[in-house]
Image 1 (cartoon, rainbow, N blue to C red):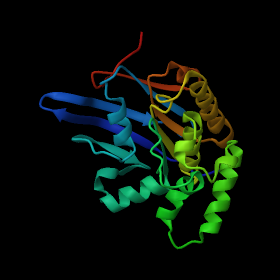
Image 2 (cartoon, rainbow, N blue to C red):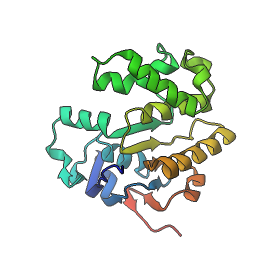
Image 3 (cartoon, one colour):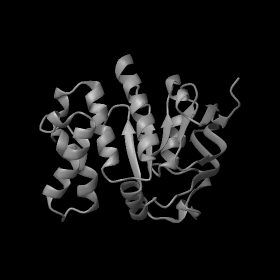
Length: 228
């Protein structure tokens, strides 16, 4: 049974962090369901700012983010948090794993936030299946500081998937990986998109992602530009 499709778009997004310096300047973008969207550009071009606004981690100064046709600026923080937990998954450059928790416990955090009253056994079983699928099941009881960078990012991917999100946001996901681990992650995201039909929005410098995307957004100076 196919999941219901969704729509996500940003209309005329403006974001200013310093006086007269716009991180984003009238950006309009649409995220195709079931595809990999890559946001590229030099440092300071507004990639992370745009990703954070689309992911409801930040708000624009003006413009709108529409989710299934609804203006998210009308949502209070509780509703925004619910959407982030239930509809979105997140992968970050520095992993953001909780050092005091095991790999398995890190993976189930989104489910514990969503419903803390369900038995941990049910969550653990789901986490184990994901970890096995990504060939790190043997690390379930380890702590993050015992893992390689590539292993930590696979744990982060598992954490992003466990809540069965409609879209996964990744901010420089290969930025803290060596070359081999970075290429493996690109292949993994391609597989997740093809086999699990997962939608990705990726802010990155890594041009290897251009090989697997059909929707490229190139930013410069906070504006979408045509890439030569």
